Image: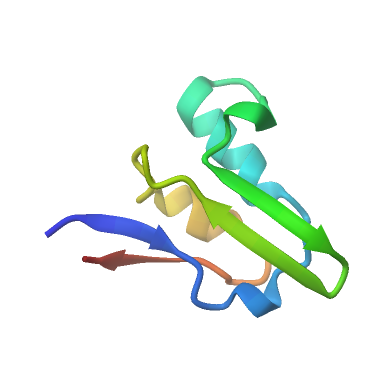
Length: 76
C-alpha cells in the first residue's frame, strides 16, 4: 500500500504557511513557494489546504511542522 499526506483537520489551519515552506525545502532544498506541493488558500478563519499529489507527499516532517495538527499520513 502507498502512503499519502492528508488534511483531516483542515478547519484548524491558521494559514501560517509552515507546511508550504517545509515542503519546498524537502523537494528543492531552498524556500520557493512556487515549487511547494502544498498551497494555502483563503483568508483568516477560512483556509483551504491544497496538496499536489503528483509528487511524493508522505513526509513525516510536514505532519511534525504543523502547529495545529492538521496533517496525517494515511495508507491508501
